[in-house]
Figure 1 (cartoon, rainbow, N blue to C red):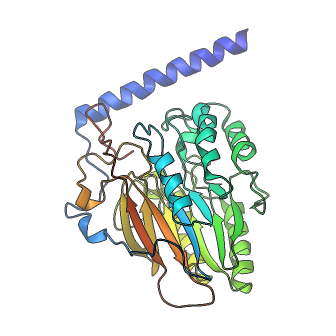
Figure 2: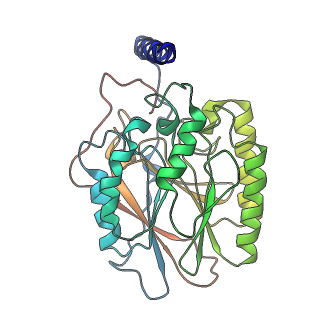
Length: 332
């Protein structure tokens, strides 16, 4: 009985603290984490792909951030993945506003009808309303693994975080890493060591390596709502991960966390920021700057090629949910 009362008290205090943070940020007029007033029309790029993948091409659907999806963007994206011949769906985190609702998404995922679903853990899976850490973080991680990572052929890293590798078709190796479950601590030495080993094996097997994570790497040209916001330890880990991506020739990196679209390069590696699966879009960001709901399609041809991989941005035509006055000024 005492334990239950303590949990209720902690939850109540968390709500009070969260509301105070929202009020404080609104009063201070906190600015957006978008890095430039000119951003982000210069970072809009899309490659038109054929309706179906040509012979020998592996097609993958990618997106993130479907929490508060009042318009049905995620179900639409699932239908797009099936209709356009995707061999897998990479989800980059934040299925719902709170992890207690994540299981409800399983009914929508059933519509994939055999298309493998590879999810990442996002901050809304390990934080109360995506903002506050409560006791039981390890349970949240373990529960996520049990609920969503039973896909056949997926090789979980033998560490506490949610990291894994998976081969998609004959050509692609997907490596998913976790930069949110260790609060403001980046990837951690153990995960970085595992990442190096996984990338080395994939390179030896002549795979085209695709990487995914929830938060973008620090010091990217678009937004500081990435690993920058987690402090020096996280920024150091971000630099270490980028160095590994460069060393082993990662072909492309996908990130989310900011609810928008942008295409840029970091350390010579193409990156796609894709947080458009239904969460409220970045406040004040025009459609021409990436403020729209969407899903991505990636085509990977067989064999080694030095040509950049082609990525199509498929835009949702059913409207848009924008941050309103009740949202914080920070990009969520």
